[in-house]
Image (cartoon, rainbow, N blue to C red; front, top):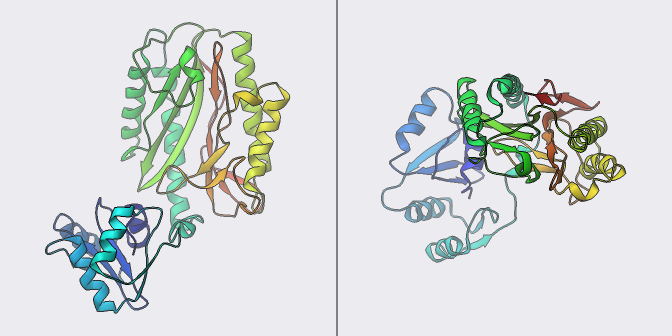
Length: 342
């Protein structure tokens, strides 16, 4: 029983806000309500819906439709997605169909770790498009403009570049706000001497890409310059160690050692990166929290984004997207990483 909309999309090609996918050894049944049956039929006509999937309409409730399909399967043991099902929903399902319900953890996410050729082609297009948006930052970032105005320009740039939507809320953080890793753009106007963190991403054909670049409004102080240089060095150290077979935590260690050596270890308050896919945060975790068994594999796509944040000086983060290969990385966001001075 697959209830995650993202996992349903991955397995079937159907995108919607509701639905249940029931998979038996003999048949895949996608339960949809009236809002989506026509959408699914049109997707099948253009070859976007997996051929083996049968669509079952909801006549009254999802629970009734689910029970009917499972009874037809003769299901005695049912595995559901423990990470995506609430306690109340599971209790309702158990009451509707008393069976051996199990929650074995991630059912589909491990399948999504390694990207196939079609997915990689989408990432390549998306990465190039995102770098194109970054190429216009010099037009949008300027003294006197508010963070919110710059973020709106970036979002319009994402739309013009062909992205269906931003992958997350765009971050524009200048001056003291740059010391907040996930600052929300506000009405503060950029001013001379500001470091500016610009973190944005887009969704192309369902897949997310993510990029962070840094700008300086006029001349910034020596400490702020040093902060940027340290983060750039840390990012390069992380990029240099990535390869299939390397422990995910080793990538974080490589970046962290650089910042530790420059007295900025305590200023690095998040992991070095995360996986990308149909969601903007997926496995693998390039983090101190990654276990020794978590290793990078060829075909994984992930971000590399060390940062350092010092109240009173500001913050810096650089982020790129990479495809892990047997010999190293394929940089999906090839573009300038220099501090942009405006």
